[in-house]
Image 1 (cartoon, helix red, strand yellow):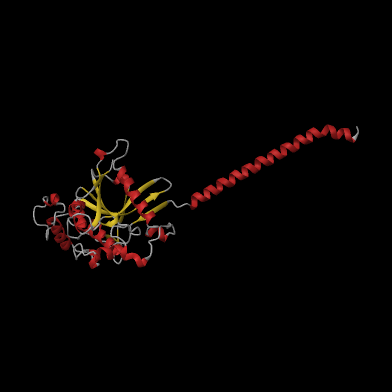
Image 2 (cartoon, rainbow, N blue to C red; image 1 turned 60 degrees about the vertical axis):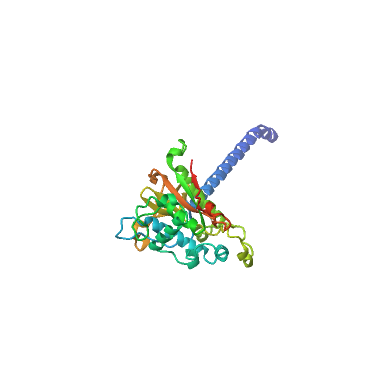
Length: 326
């Protein structure tokens, strides 16, 4: 047989073998690419943080008296809120403008730079009542408040803060007014989460985000030389106040939220004034949705404008707005 004839007969088999070889190499390359992509995704999942946190601005911890029965928890939560207010707003445009206006009591914490004690809070609250702030709740106290061990709640704290010129609001969570499709107090958990995420974004990052390098860009505050010309009702976005949580017989301060990115779950980070300290540090508790076992919750928060407009009529200042979650 001639060599040319042998080659012609072997050519189809040779071409088929080469095709199979090329296809197998192509399949192997595809498998290698898919394996590499899977490994890259696995590494990204490993490097991705499992949890992220958003927290309020700096505050002082005020705990309940050791020999008490928890009657002063409302005062302690209010003191923590006021300490954050003092630290965040002293020497700011709000403080300068509001003080220059000549309105408001001279002993307000952001003017003195000090958080009032329980006795001073009781005295100031009685003055606020006498000025027409929350007169309805005043009738619930069976004796003069000053010097007593009667507890206060979010509505009493709101009356005092609005008397001092702070724009505070209330949020009510009652399951009987909520949709049957949602779990108990799920709307409250979602609202608290959105509160911290939104305030953190507008502040360009909370203290936790800034420490971890997750701060985001925010709008410039403008020329510092014109700070005193800023209206008292303008926004101060770089300060994140805590939340005052109240339920039947007790109250706590929510200082932040924690989000589990993998499970898509969240929890509230809070300080309970009655829990004391552990190893010299305040105990920070984490509440998931399952921990919200009370029938009703009421939340006090400071609006982004912080101060009420000095032109707001007194009747409107005395009126407290409340948001009912549905």
